[in-house]
Length: 142
Length: 368
Image 1 (cartoon, one colour):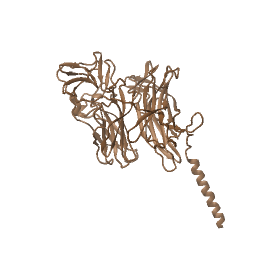
Image 2: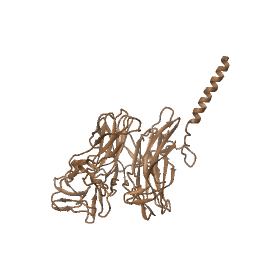
Image 3: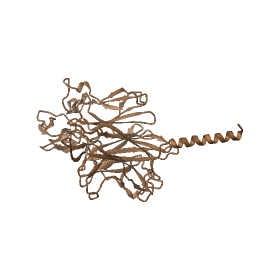
Image 4: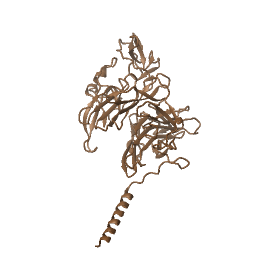
């Protein structure tokens, strides 16, 4: 085979390989566009509009205070069968914590005094919920 | 991967009839060394610090909602919500071979309340997201922190009024019982490539309710150092304002996934949500959208990738609430994204307190 034919075969083989590779690639999904057909860019090539950003406003989380033991047998029993606490000889629909001044307090994740009579303190929702609301359960083993 | 653990010390000799919450203590981490073909338990992790008022705490705290991530140096992190202590516990193995040890907590002064999400940045910085109890009436704040050079920063708060543990009401009945769906964590984030002249390398999504009680999903950004966070109206999935639709639309279960880009392949930012539409419904849709910009203006258009997927929850509403979303493959200039969700396409044949049948897991993929 003459060198020129060899080169032609090589070029054709290379072209075929490139074509095969390109055809075997998954088709990229059409990029998203807005209503005017302009592409939606994942990374903005121009500085993003600063006025569009709504900043996170000032937010105040509940501070966690050190927990204390429930003392005595006055802890209320919720309708779910779970128990509240007995703090300062008083039924507590929540749990006991040591307050900033060292005093024993009943609280339900920041609600000082605990939950009201027809509520229970829920350790998943971190708040008072209706006493008859079922707890968010893990399934039992099958 | 990790699974919840039932230590012998907490498991009653006579077994359990009913919920198992009181018997869960810690979690076990399983490892594969053959690309996921086989897994073996690597280590069980448990926090047994005594909690006053909780006699069982020294037998292992109740862990839930595991999230794992790997760093660029081979380090592996596993995070769980510690329900007993209302904290997020983070465990670290320096290389995936040495055992995991527990790190100091990322939100030690607050009540943390839902499944953590973790990601590791290009420089090995670990990011953690969860919700914490607010002192105001908005109940939950979206909280973030990062671990850099072995030390946590001061927690930051990216959003308020975050929905938690929603029970989606379909206002319909299946097999003679009301159809509801008990959804899981309502926030997600990922780390990726930043825009020009604006550090938006952390993008997040979270669920809120509008003034009609319908759920919708917001998208927002933080800078890599967590000094500035906010949300974009243009990245809203669903109806943020009442009156936009006449039939009920709930959008929830947000997920964010980024592809950071590589030589010749542009970066990608994708978000997905689940929705139920109509005054009554028995199915859900899953949508995706580019968390992106048009000429610098934040903009996103949702595109359905799953339509009319039948829901068959159990009578508590459980239908598998741990939807995942990943980029899984690159080919040429295309990136393959995969969204996981519960699948009941084999039909709803039984609903009982703890069982909804059929329930399986399905993956939906697309190239973008």
